[in-house]
Every structure is written in C-alpha cells, then in structure tokens.
Length: 168
Image 1 (cartoon, rainbow, N blue to C red):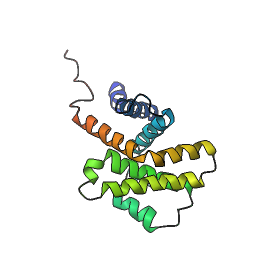
Image 2 (cartoon, rainbow, N blue to C red):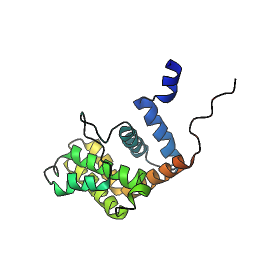
Image 3 (cartoon, helix red, strand yellow):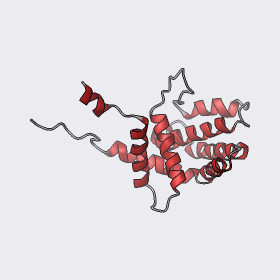
C-alpha cells in the first residue's frame, strides 16, 4: 500500500513545485522570480485547501462568495492579510477557474476587484518587501490571471498526468 500512497499523495513542497514548473512554462523567461513563486504558492495553497474547511478559511467555491465576504462586508478593508486573501481568491477563481466562472460572472470585473484587493493589502502592509510584492500583484494581476487560466487549460488538455502502469 505504501508505494500507492507515494504515487497518489503529494506534500506541500511537491504541489508547490508542480505549479512552479507549470507557471514557468506559460510565462516569459524574464518574469519576476518573486511573483512567479508567489503565484505558485497561491495555487499550491488552494490545491490543498477545502471549500468545506472548518479549521482554516475555506476556499470559496465561486466568485459570488468572494463578493459576499469582502465587498458586502467592509469590516476587513484595513486588514492586509484578509485583503491579500481576497485578492488571491479572485486570482484563483477568475484565473485558474476562469472557464468555469465565466458562465455566471463577469471575469473582467472580478479581475479589477482582485487587483484592488492586492493594492489595498499593499497599502496597509507593514513589511516593505511584502508590500512591494503585493503592489506588483495589484499592478500585474491581469497578466497573472491570464497565466493561471492558460495553465489550467493546458493541464486539462493533457490526457494523462500519470503514465500508464508498466506491463509485467
């Protein structure tokens, strides 16, 4: 059973590397390294988070949930961490899950909203390096959103991620 568990299981490092390689493949060679790593970590985090989590902030299942949590409820506007989370959720849903969300939501509007969340997070972030990264995410949100969508499509179009078992 252990070899099967190793084949099917993945830890955070493996998941991060998976998305890092994928994003690198859909990005220009001169893409900012910190932004690339940040985006891979966003995808890795959400790949290992449940929409039904009770231990941590659950991953929203659709963009309407992001609207309800961060636009209708204005209590978190000065909380850098929550604004970063809101931006990351918009990036995931409007980017990686663009094709699924497009039927019910205006992707461009949510992309603008996500960029705004990142800019707000940067404005209230106390650490200068992180504030710069969050500002960059706000400025480059649309290009990262498009890369996430492209990566999602490319992964979906691959017939097999795991090769067939060897014939004995």
